[in-house]
Image (cartoon, rainbow, N blue to C red; front, side, top):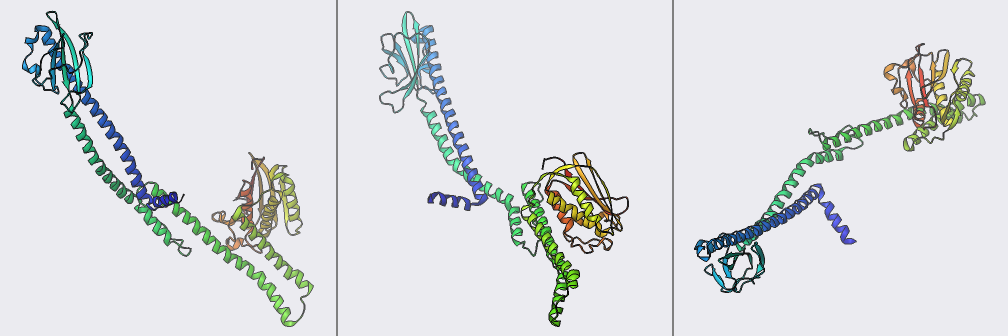
Length: 462
């Protein structure tokens, strides 16, 4: 096990360049070995065919001459070694060598079978005393004047075998050179290809929380490395936006909490300095509202933090959405200064009643704070959506700020300032809507005020 870990460590320490070069060398080595073996096998087969062809052609020529005019027809060129043939013999029917090449043995090179017909026969691997190599012999039987003659033409292929050895030697010399050149070229080319990655890595290491505006270089070629750089930059954009949002959140939360805390601490310091108790009216009109405001803000921040960390925990059940809207309308109507207009139809959805109720309450509170006199609640179905619209007759939301209004502690134009709100309610509405697979947006209202359209899917598909 220790050896395996050590090898793995060495392998990984090579890096992508080294590992790629080694893998390329191994693949090319296998290819070279296979091609070399195939080349030698083909060369060996060609040499065998050449040897067989030379022997059979010589045996056929001599047999044809003898068959046409007997032994006298054979001239020295027919019998002399050459063209790959080293020994020729003519054996009569009594097994006596009657003719042949100058150095032909006095006995037949192979035993002659009298049952042989006049077809060509071929014998391989014949050993003759005094020779270090084996012979391949072509045998051809012919007849003339009633006598039978057997022609033997022997070829060793020794020179051809030497060519195979030479070829193998050349391949053994060339293969390591090819491997070294290939591995070196692969190493250099891969290094050049990965050079942008090194620059990206160096730039990424230099990016810290205080320099999130920096970006990694994007190479010009449209390849995977360019895609990687663009992905990293897109991730850095999101990180910078998240970091900036976090900084703004901390600053805005501190700003929002400072006012009620200042009020509470001021009253308590006054009571401490004057050594008098805070009266009940002050507690009811000042302290309790400010403390409750801080509690709501802390609860909202905790909910958003949980949503960012793990997402909202939704417990959906089948609910009558119109009942929730009616209940919210009754709550708003209880405020004497606001007139409520309702136009709804019965709709049943699969959702978390607590979270949907909270979203409706936040939207109603937002409309109530900014309404001049009237808040309208409408609900109907559009395709497979339950559409709830809560609008007011206040100043409205500028079109260029309709997306930003759902950000945490969003600060809009003075005409639609947050009044006593903390700027977290609409952010919570968006989280709740997203958790239910719905949509929330600001739409145009015929009265010029703000209209918030909340869409929830109808059915149990969530």
